Amino acid sequence: MTLPASEITPRAVYEGRRALLRQMAAGAAGMALAGWAARDALAQAPRPGKLAALTGARSAVAGALTMEKPTAYADITSYNNFYEFGTSKSAPANAAGAMKTRPWTVAVEGEVKKPKVFDLDELLKLAPMEERIYRLRCVEGWSMVIPWVGYSLAELIRRVEPTGNAKYLEFVTLADREHMGGVRSGVLDWPYVEGLRLDEAMQPLTLLAFGLYGELLPNQNGAPLRLVVPWKYGFKSGKSLVKIRFVEREPRTAWMKAGPDEYGFYSNVNPNVDHPRWSQATERRIGEDGLFQKKRPTLMFNGYEAQVGQLYAGMDLKKFF
Ligand SMILES: Nc1nc2c(c(=O)[nH]1)N[C@H]1C(S)=C(S)[C@@H](COP(=O)(O)O)O[C@H]1N2
Ligand SMILES: [Mo]
Image (cartoon, rainbow, N blue to C red; front, side, top):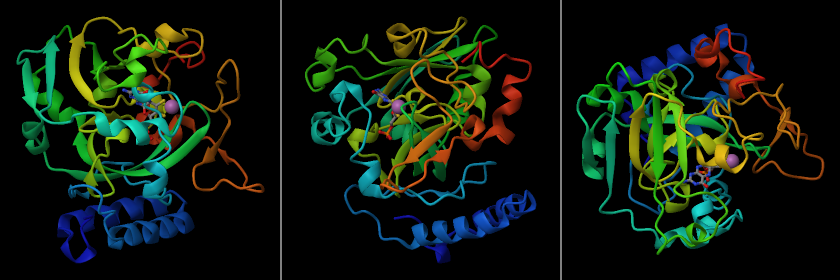
């Protein structure tokens, strides 16, 4: 389960308090206190008890512990986008049980000095697990707050030593026709491919996630490991990763192939750049739905502007959407 307060390492507590003080100094004192209380409640909440425990110390990475109340486990694990299992929100929870998540390997290749096929067990031990509480904003206009367990993708990147030609990373996810009904359909050009610029991939918030709510990832959320890039629309966070390629040129992603005018390479959350077919200015928080529930304003870079804004300095974000 998530570490009870009594077992959190003194350093984690110290770092957490410092993060809190920084947030309070930033003028969010009331919200910060509410958020802190929510996280303490989370830490004491019983494990969902569905899957094996995978705990992490609270992250000290700047911005890694959002102040907002985590979405209920039942919502996070029953309202999903995972088109390999179908396009409805309930299809992944119903069908992803068929996916075999062991044995599992991830091939890391391309422009690196030390290419390697990593076994899942090796990846689970590669770096200390951390709890990160991130907002996830889907391009469709809804959001959740998810307590992930994992470590920065940078930990893995450093170990394979990118060459000077490595400018981008391409992420390839599982496409198993036998166990994934959606892969037999033509809804996307499989496998699901996503990409990041190397500096985006190295940003410490970019997470390789293996769990949520203190347990291994449920299949429908991308077991056994997935990417989470909290300042970008949810589709950039590929599930069930099998390959990471370091490349020189910007990868063509599955969504860019499907709708080049609608889905750009960057896909940073941006309330000022509308999707061609709908506004991106507000969002519906899953679990808060109700007749009189107000939508929430969508935040620039999904609220992570202080951490990631400088990655895009001087870029026209309407052009590089
Ligand atoms: N392989 C794969 N990864 C994927 C998707 C997908 O269809 N296939 N959907 C994306 C989208 S659109 C979103 S919003 C998030 C949803 O993650 P969640 O179901 O864990 O909330 O996963 C992303 N990763
Ligand atoms: Mo999404």
